[in-house]
Length: 255
Ligand SMILES: [Zn+2]
Image (cartoon, rainbow, N blue to C red):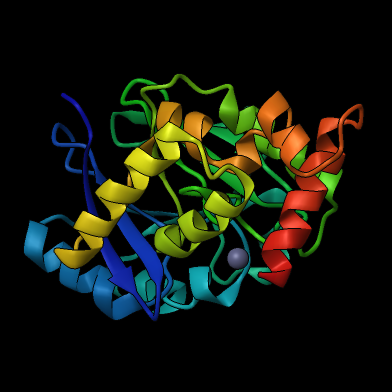
């Protein structure tokens, strides 16, 4: 049976999400920004929390872990490289490891750059990817602990996922990301289409994610640093893609 998911907002603009296996009734929270909205989502769905899969150590992704673990005795899975900075960790994982949530199976992809040990969880059978603060819809995370080359490599790993993979990211930043993306590629038709959709969803007070990887590849400038139109737009013809990426990231930081 396919996985089910439940998406909700936490804190100011963080997304919380539950992934549920209807067969075994196992349920994982991907990150735990805050306990109360996770519990409210559990109540709404009638699911019981069995696991928390952590993408990185930032407090707005881990603040709810201790309270939820106390209450549900759930297992906490976290990136090996950041386990020391995350409360309640039971298991650590690295590139290529498999994590089971009941009958569902996630593959771990190391996606450093935003933080040095950031990981993403991909459920290949269900074509779901939980990418934390590495990739946002039409954007990407700030490069805080790593460097631009590292972040570009991480984005390339995610870009290699099938186009029909649903991308769940850590924050609702899509509208602001689109405004910035238009400064890079004002004539991108896929970006214009995504803008229309996002304006409508925002007016209806609905989340703008998940998006499909295919849509991100067509419209997200941070995944397009090796596309000739984008390279030209930032005036870096002949430079390696990671430098083009670094320039786009710099411009976004200043925007
Ligand atoms: Zn973060």
